[in-house]
Image 1 (spheres, helix red, strand yellow):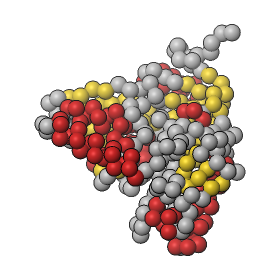
Image 2 (image 1 turned 135 degrees about the horizontal axis):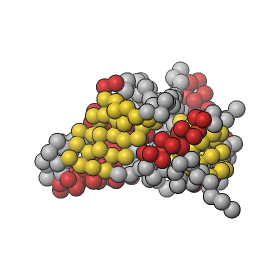
Image 3 (image 1 turned 60 degrees about the horizontal axis):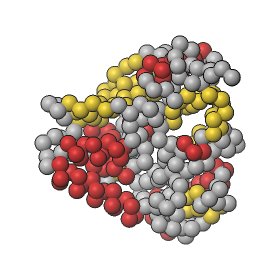
Length: 301
C-alpha cells in the first residue's frame, strides 16, 4: 500500500484518524483527514492542499479545552504537536516558541533561566498556539500581558507577523477565534536576571496550588466555562448543587465544579448534555448564562 503524503512533501496524509486519544477528555470521533507537519513549510503545504480541496481546516494542539463530536470532524485536522522549537534571546529576554510547545514545559524552561513572567502557565495543559488564540491565563497572569507578536498563517497562505496589540485581546478571547488564521509561532517578552531558584519556587507553588484545587485524577478538558463578572463559574455551579452531577460517564467534578470529568467510557454527547444541563440549571437559579470556555468541534445537533 502506497503511503499518501501532502503534495510536494513527505508529510503523511492520513484518513479517519481517531481523535479521542489526542484530546485530554479522551472522547470524540475521527478526523476525515489528518496530518502532523514537522515544519512550517509542511503545515503551509497541508493548508494549501485543504483549501484546494475546499475542505474545512481544524487545528489541534495539546487537545485541551476541546470537545470533539462523536461523529468526528469533517475536513482536515492539522496537529501542531511537532512544532516545538524554542529560541531564547539572552540580550532581550525574549522567547520565540513554536505553536505546539507545551505551556508547562515553557514555564519550567523560563524558570530555569531565571526569567519571570510565565510562572502562571505551569499548570495549563495546553500549547502555545492555543494560548495565543484564547488568551489563556491563570493565577492573575495571561497571554496578552507577555506576548510580543505571533506569526500567523493567513487564509491566503501567506505568513504575517502580527503584534499582540492587533489581536483584540480580552478575557479568554482574541480576534483569532473562529477564523481560518492559524498561529504558527509566538514571541514572549520576559523579565530576565532573577535568581532561577526563586522563579522555580514561584512556578512550583502555582503548580501545587492547581494540583490541590483542581482534578487531575480523571480525563478532563480544563475549565469548562468562562467566569462571569458576578461570581466564578465554579462557585455558581457548586451553589446550584451540581457537584457530582452525572450524565452517562460524564460528571461535574466533586473537587472543582467548573470541571467535567470522563469517569471512564464517556461520550462527547454525555459531556455536551452535561454542559447544557449545567447552563440551564445555573440560569434558572441565578439568572446567569454560563458561556463555555471549551471549544466544540464537529456536529452536536
